[in-house]
Image (tube, rainbow, N blue to C red; front, side, top):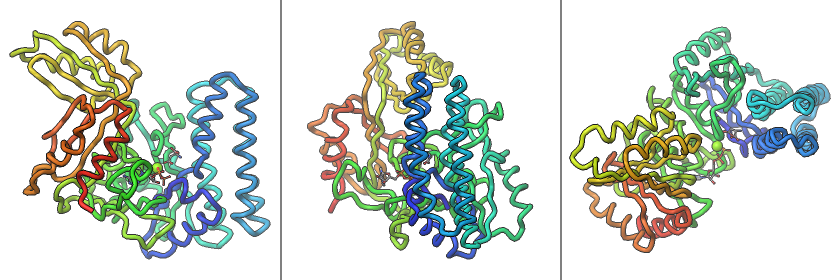
Length: 436
Ligand code: ADP
Ligand code: ASP
Ligand code: MG
């Protein structure tokens, strides 16, 4: 069971989490995020330190510290556990304050980002102690690891976690941190923003759990982004493939990579609402019945690159040479479209854009469009349901489309538009493709 930032962000919510994790019979691993707002605040502290602005960093550390000094007395009622919580908070803020005195580097940045999950799990564990609910504290840094390409090492995670769990044959509740891990240099690292979902799915796969529950602040995956579009509704069931596409292409409710581990071991994933635990939520599993468009998501910060060359005409090996450039710079491609004489691809990692462009120029003229958005439409596009693609295109008649990718899989159409058209596209698709 994974609980996100808002689910643990207030003392009374932590109490609710306690109720939810103690009502079932199965042994449970509980994965917690940092309290909502904490990781953003830690990023702010890191940014100030990176910019050499120690007084701003200090101001931010003190503001976050004040938040925790208010939080714990509302969470805990007994003097001994309050004293424990105070000591936990003191230790972590002493650590942050020491960083004001030493020189900043990337490893320190990651240490800073890890503080949120470390504090939230320790405070929650202290709450369980106060309520005399038996539980085992499992430090994620003892078993969660990534390799030199920042990919989780599922085999090792599984081995280590199984060995640790075998020490507690009667354990019923285990509390651990989402998001944080060790990297190949044995430094503290993380699974990128929103990574607690990924932790939960990796753990579920590592121990072949019966289910992976992601508890958040909404009643499941909605058919469109509820922050942008009115009248969205939860989807009862999604296949792993559909959920993976939606997560990867921008549905913020799930970390982009959080589906594959569960899918690998066919562990069903449930998205549930901490604020409304009886809501049905979304069940993600191997196969589901799908007709027509099920959901839409959008991913910002996309750059499109077009390589145009008459040498591409009737030539073989052209695409391979182009893709090798992206491979060399470890830059994943999201969308691809081709014509006889040109190929367009999209990327969202711009760290090596200049080198990539320079090398692609060897193959022809290169055009770059920044600030694009991918609109991802997921459902059964090729089923008996006629007109799924027609309703998509009809909805977008007023929107200039830069690329379309259809047929890569039977459940996805991706459309690239300039970022300024993202919101209008999401809104008109909502009107056009879902029957109300
Ligand atoms: P947590 O802190 O629990 O991980 P997140 O904020 O990461 O929660 O994700 C939940 C939020 O995702 C929701 O509050 C909602 O605003 C947003 N969201 C974006 N797209 C969707 C979608 N398609 N369905 C449901 N929620 C979505
Ligand atoms: N606390 C981390 C973040 O805010 C991880 C998570 O919440 O999933 O990104
Ligand atoms: Mg999240």
